[in-house]
Image 1: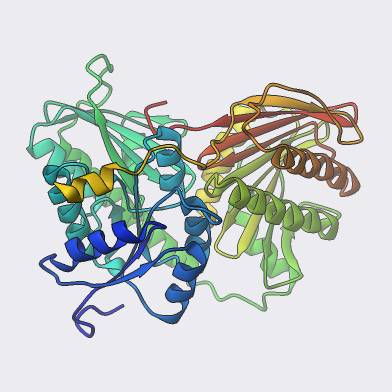
Image 2: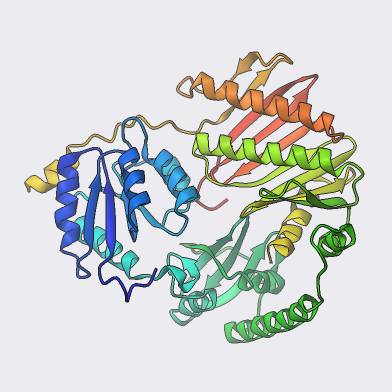
Length: 365
Length: 100
C-alpha cells in the first residue's frame, strides 16, 4: 500500500458497544495523522467492510457476542495478512493476551481508564499508523533491523533480555550494562547463537527484565560481534547465490526434485523428506517408497490440525511431530507448502526437534 | 469524567473460552473415559480433538508410518497425544508469553 498515494489512513473499529465506538471514533479522529474512522458492531460486518475497502488498521474488542474478537482475528489473519491489527479490551487475562499475540496482532491494549491511559492509547495507535508495512523489520519496531535494536540496547547501557521470535524459532540475547553477555537459540549458545539470531530478517521481539545471574559466555564487544555476524551473513549469501545459479529442470521430474531436496537430507538421522504444495497434487520426495500415501496423510493432517487451531484460537500451528516404532516424523508449513521429514526411530524427541528446526530454516530460506 | 465512566462501566466478565490445562483419555471408540479438563471447556471441542487425534493415528497406520505419540505445537498451545491400545491420552497445555 503506498501511503503517498492515499493521504489518510483508514481505521476500522470493531466493538459491540455503540457508545464506545462513537467515543473512540471521536478520539481517534483527532490524531495528528487525521485518520478516517469506520466502525462495525459485529465481526461479520467488520469482515465485510475489510473485503470492500482497504484499511490500514483494525482495532478489535475481544469479548463480543456471536463472533468474538479471537475468531475475527483468526479470519483476518488468513484473509488479510498485511493488515495491521490491534486488540483493545477490558479482558485482563494473560492467556488471551498470549493468544492474541500468537495470532500476529501488533498491539494489545487494555481499554483506557484514565486520561493518561487515553493519551498513551492514542500515541500507540498514531505510532502504529506511522509504520510502513513493506519496510520489513521486527514487529514492535517495524523500521528497525535487529542490528539497530541490539545497538540501541548496548548504547543505552541496558541490562535486559531481548527475546526474538522468527516463525517457529525463538532466541534470547542477554545484555548487562550494555554488553552482550550471552545468547541462546535452538541448540546453540554464545556467539554461534548470536550469529544465528542475527540472520533472521523479520519476527517479533520483546524486551524482558535483566537476568543478573546469567553466566557470561560472550566476551567480544558488541561492535565486534555485529561485524563478524555481518561478514558471516555476506559469505553465506555469496555461497547461496553460487548454488542458486545452477539451472533447474522441469519441476515434475524426479531427479530435479531430489536435487531440490538434497540440502534438506544432509542431516543426521534423516530417512526421508517430502514437500507438498496445496495447489499441486504431486509432491517432491526423497527416500520413501510410498510418497503418495504419506503425502496424502501429511496434507490431511496439517489441514485438520490447522483447522483445529483456528477453532481453538490457539494461533498458528508451528510444528507437528509424530513418534513411532518404525520412524519419527516432523511436519511444518510455509505459505501454501508443507514439509514432512522422516527421522530414524533411534533419535530422541529433542534431537528430532532440534534437527527439524535446522531443516525447516534451510527450507524456508 | 463521564467519558471514562462509559469505558469503565463495561464489566471485565467475559464469555471468551480459556484454553484449558489438563488431559483426557479416550477408548478406541472415541468415548471419553477420564478427563481433568475444566468443565468450562466445551465438551464438543474435547470430542473434536479426540476424534482428530484418533483418526490421525489411524491414517498414519494406513500410510505405513504408525505413530505412538503426536505433538502439535501451536503458538499458544501444546497438544500432546499418546496412543493407548487403540485409544489415546491427550494433554493440553497453554503457552504463556513470559520467560520459559
